[in-house]
Amino acid sequence: MTNFRDLRWQTSAALVVAGLILYVPANILPVMTMTVTGDVEPLTILGGVQELYDSGLWPIAGVVFIASIVVPFFKLACLSWLLLMHGSPALRRERTVMRRIVHTIGSWSMIDVFLLAILTAVGQLGILASVRAEAGGLFFVAVLLCTLFASEVYESRMIWHEQDPSAA
Amino acid sequence: MRHIRGKKEWITCPECRSTCRDRPLSPDQELRCGRCGVSVKRYPDPRSLQRAWALSVAGLILLVLANVQPVLIFDVSGNTQANFVVSGVFNLFSQGYTVVALLVFFCAIAAPAIHLAAACYVLSACCLGQRLPYLTKALRIVERLEQWNLVPVYAVATLVAVVKLDMLGKVEWQLGAIWLVALALCSFLTTRALDVQLVEDRLERLSP
Image (cartoon, rainbow over all chains, first blue to last red):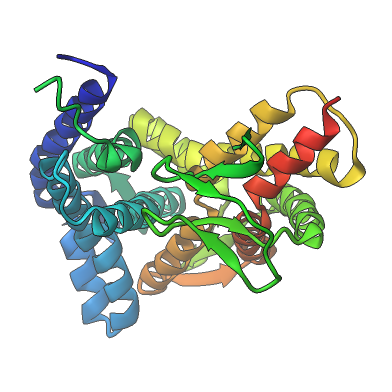
């Protein structure tokens, strides 16, 4: 029985699995290379956070760490949980709240993409200071889009959808 | 979404699609869905729409200003570089990261513009009592693009970028940064003040 709702579940699940796979290269590969007065330095997302922390700006390092590392993982974990619980009558209210949270905080991961855009735009001063985007950014954007669309496809009403007993 | 069933009025919960019975509210009350607990209806304050209208108009003006003026100027031993909101898009594009460039363009420029323009269009129809074409379509656009209006996130990202750049050279704030922050505030407050339920009621009353 492949009805409309099952297809939505499958699409969402596929996006979450893709997101989980892409999460690994997004965090391992460098997002950008900074060249400052001749020194070439590739930076991963975690490396960028480390650099901010080392310069003593731990509140800003915390914001970037939460927005770009914790939030994507939290989203993927929550969405997997929601999808696995699909159809079960337990904790429906909590699941609805959880889905709302995932949906609202999701866009804050864009902070890293914007940061990349601003830094590449400013770092055009040749050998003095230049910033180049690297492949990690692409994977990061892919994870982001996967989670955003997964939470969009899996609507709250599907949490509350009663399984048709005659179909079983 | 509101429909009459028998004599009582019912509202569909926007989250879980269950039906809740409508009843009049006093200013500090809100109606919550009995099943999932989400707020279904707020007190229909007619002034809230005017507020949202004013905020969306202000947002549109600020959007133009924020995109026309540079946000900051970066200076490394005498060499300067002005930075606009679009420059990031152009540079990512020229470095071959088309997808990333498009996403940044959509979330930081296109979506906020369309979102605010659609909100302004719908709200002006509500506040002036004028029937304009495609009002329900515009309202759907407002609802859909609300989560893609990421100007507040962009404003925070600018702050982080400045902190990073400060280690490399001198950063000078420009007027564009003020417009950007104001625009972030305006778009946030517009989405807060815009009561979709109330707008739908108004639009229904407008149609013959």
